[in-house]
Amino acid sequence: MRVDNTSGSGGSAIYIANSMIKSGYVNTVLIIGAEKMTSVPSRRSTSIIASLLSERERKSGLTLPSLAAFMAKAYMREYGVGMEMISSVAVKNHRNGALNQYAHFQKPVDLSDIMKSKIIADPLRLYDFCPVSDGAASLILTRDDMAQSFTGKAVKIRGISSYSSNPVISERKSLLEIDCVKEASDKVFKETGLTRKDVDFAEVHDMSTILEIVESENIGFFEKGSGYMALRDGITEISGELPINPSGGLNSKGHPIGATGVAQACEVYQQINGLAGPRQVKRHEVGFTLNMAGFGNNAVAGIYEAFS
Amino acid sequence: MKVYRCENCSSSFLEKRSRCYNCRSDRLLEYDVSSGIVLDTVQLFATPDNLPETYYILRISSDGITFFCRSPTQIGEGEKVSLMEDDNSICCKAERDQI
Ligand SMILES: [Zn+2]
Image 1 (spheres, helix red, strand yellow):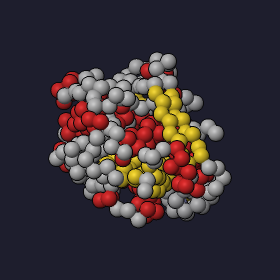
Image 2 (tube, chains in turn purple, green):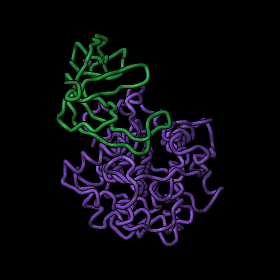
Image 3 (tube, each protein chain N blue to C red):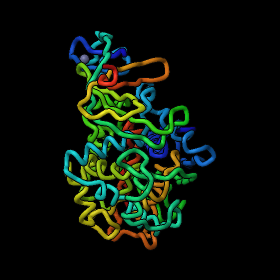
C-alpha cells in the first residue's frame, strides 16, 4: 500500500498500519518511508512542495517558507520576541544533530553563523529551514502478542491520532494556531489517559525553527506565547526537563518528505531503548511524535512507551 | 477577483466550495473584490521555478476576507492595493502607483 500525505506520509502510514493491526485485518506491517529530493534543482523542489497548497493560494506565489515567515512575524509581533530567539531552535537542533550519525548535518552552528546566512523568506534565513535531503527509515509494526518473537526491545504505540485542518491557510483564524496539531494532540492524550507532564521527550515537525516553538505550544507542552521561554531556559535541550528533537529534528537530521514521520518513530524507538548514544535523553519511558502534512493540513500525534 | 460568502453565517472563502465549512449551508454567494489593504508582507528569495527569483507575498484584507497575493515591488503595511487575477496568478499593485 502506498501512503501519500506529503510531509505527513510517514506518520500517516504508521497511523494506518496501527489501525489495520488493531482491527485484526493484518498481523504485521513493514513500513518504509523514503524520499529522494536532491535529484531536482531546489527551485523545482520548492515548486513541487508548493503544489500541496490550495489552487488559488498557489496562484499567489505562496510557498511553505513564506508561510513560516508570516508565522514568525506574527509570533514576534504578538510576544515581543526577536529573530535571534527563534533561530536558537536551529542552534539547539544542530547541536543535537551533531550527535546523530543518521543526521544530514552533523555539525553544530552558532547564532552568528545563522544570522549571517542567506535570507530565504524574510526574516527567516537558510538555517531556519530544514535542508533538502534524501533519506529513508523503516520499522516493523506487529500485534502485541507477537512482538517478543521479533525482538526483546519492542516499543509500544500507546496511542496515535490524526486530524485535518482547513488546507486554505488564509481562511484560518490565526497564523499561530494550527488546529490539526492541537486536535490530534488533544485526541491522543485523551485516548491514552496520559497528560503532557507524562511525556519524557518529543520529536516534532520543525520544518522551520518557528514551527518547533508554535507546535510545542499547540501540542500543549507550554502555554501560548511561552514556547520560546522553554527554549531560552534550556527546558527543550537534551539535558532539559522536556527534550524536543533530540535527533536534531527536521532542521538538522533532514526532512526527506515521506521518510520523516517514520524517522521520528525510529528516534523514539532508540531513545526508549536507551540506544541513542551521546544524544540519549535522561528520562526515556514515554516519547511523543508530531508529524505534520503541508502547513498544518493534517497532523499525526503519537505516544510511545517501553513494551512491558 | 472572485471570492465567496455564506449567506447563512457570513463566513468568507477564497476557494469555491459546495458547502460552507462553518455551518454546512449550501447558500454560497460569489462576489468580486478589486482592492484591499496590506496586513503584512514577506519578501521571498527562494521561489518556485515558474516564478521570478524574488518577489513579495502580501497578506491582504478586503471586504471581510483575508488572502495572499504577489507583488514584484515592496508595498507597505496599511497601503491600499488593487487586485488582479488571471488563469495563472493573483497579483496586486499599490494604488499610489496608479495615480
Ligand atoms: Zn455558513
